[in-house]
Image (tube, rainbow, N blue to C red):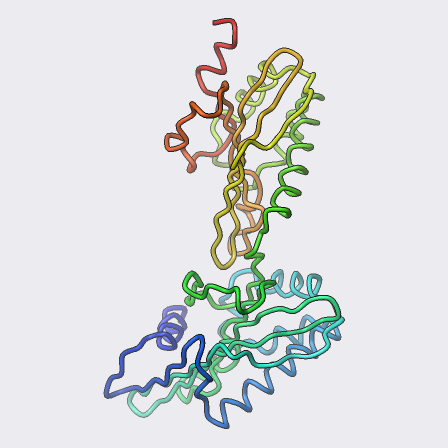
Length: 328
């Protein structure tokens, strides 16, 4: 049945027209093309979404999703709780956005499935969110598919959104922090480095391990031994750290933010270049949210070939130059 939902979602963005189906397509700049029935469906959905936010009603919000999505979508309960916490109860209003709506239908041996996708915004007393709503308002063959398929809620202003990278095939509720601005990224890195330097100064293996995601703790090979090696190299007297020039690289998709950060770490006897691979947000795979790896190099930073750093491996990794030290 997940395959059916994927097919329905793809129908909404497919430009082809066949004899057994039809599609009306808007664009991100044109006015929308929807029927009165579809307009009423969107109105009813968004009224209930905003009411659920105002009353902080998890069950009401969950009930808007189709029974199929409630059953199959990963982490729906956690995502709803996160949304209520992030948006709060200070919702003022909602409105449709001039980014285009599109609807599609699929006919199969007399059965009919009708879907709509529409961009809206929700305003609170402090912020405005762009919201992409996708729902099936009629399915004569599978009534369990009727209801919301997906809600994607963004902190960005709708005019700044790039819809080309959205994942259209993932049912459920997604509240991506898609715009991890440089200032916010620096704040996150600062907190992470404070945690790491504290663990180094205290030579506390458990504190270092607590920074890693659950999945990467399982995947890392000989993590305890590599942490002890890091302690031996760095010692207990970390003097300072700083983010290196162009040292923060951010990658994102609809539910995940990845940060690659290069920093200089100074102790009383040595200086290291450290790369942290971190996932501040991973809503589709919460067990992978957190630190994936720490890579330690000898300076200078400019001589490190970043293309040879393996971003797939977990744990602590120390280059041969760092192990030999500065005495050479």
